Image (cartoon, rainbow, N blue to C red; front, side, top):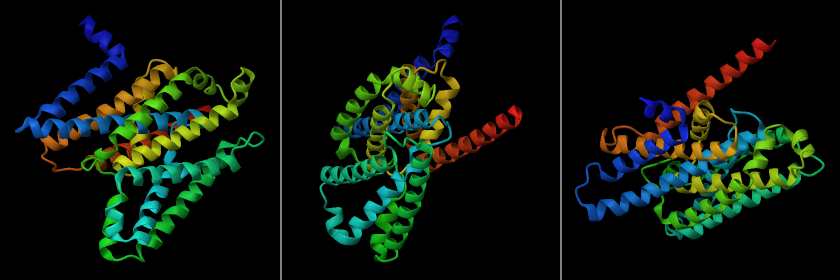
Length: 324
């Protein structure tokens, strides 16, 4: 009984146990040929861990910068930009050239374009003399709408076969994870985690607000720019692996904020990674081996993420009404 109480009082340990159990189930359920199944499932398992880390940490960092628990990096238009890049490559290269592109080269090009546009956006809208994150987010929303409109326009100019390919790239798919990018993604994940972990105490200070952070000696502009670039890299990586994801990061961050006993980023970064990875792995194990792919995990995740988004909005509205 005491062990259960301690377990419930330690969300990181509980999430880690759930993750280990989920990994074991995913690797061992309904195995017919270990020589074939184990390497395939192991690669997909690593991909789920990378995606869970990238989506969870990027959303948590974005909410720390904006001081708002209902915002996600998708507001900056990264997902829409990814779809536009796919549409333009397919339009100019054609179906045959597009499907024969080297996987790592295509991934590097996508990340480079997204990072370049992020640098331009942050360079002109987030300067030392003008550090208005609200305006940056609003411009990101406008660019996201522009990118989606351009994608729709390109989709009308291509033939039906190419349009189907664009549509497939427009939605997340956890059953078709691009395992060829694992080595690159793991290296980028480790590099970004080292950077974010070294900044964890400065991130705690950022929660106090911009003025307090500057007063306490935090290089606000440099840190914010570095965090924004890290967010864009993580979003690019996750999107290239499984496709655009809108509400998953919001869902796991809401769970992290609910169960985390401290506001310190040293705990929250680990917990959000564990929760996100556990959700993907356990969910995929259930849908693959219990429901026999009768449902689609990404649809369920986006559904619960959307519900969490609405609940957070209503909770904030009720809190504001109470304060008035």
